Image 1 (tube, one colour):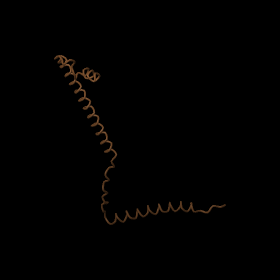
Image 2 (cartoon, rainbow, N blue to C red; image 1 turned 120 degrees about the vertical axis):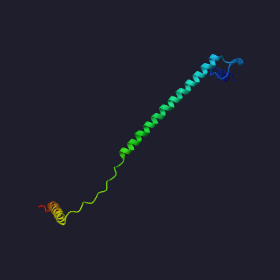
Image 3 (cartoon, one colour; image 1 turned 90 degrees about the vertical axis):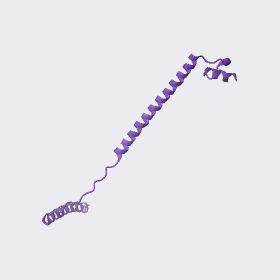
Image 4 (cartoon, rainbow, N blue to C red; image 1 turned 135 degrees about the vertical axis):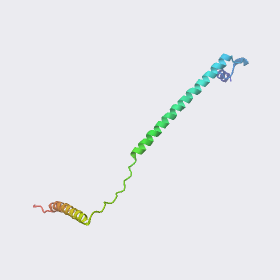
Length: 115
């Protein structure tokens, strides 16, 4: 029991022998309590700033990781019938050239090897 009273006296909660604290002591206790509250408010403000910064960085990372929207491909405008025929013939020549090139590779791969 005595240890509890001594602890409370040291903490400023209980005054020995029923003596009221001096005005200077009470003012100092209030000043310390206010200073402690200011420090806690500063710590909370710093934590809020840090969380806000982390949020902004995370949102920036999410935005950077997003794939850009694919723009719709508009169809090629139609030209004159003659221009369309020339384009089809050119595409046919390119397709035949690729097919012949691949055919040469297939022929070479399918060759019989002399043993």
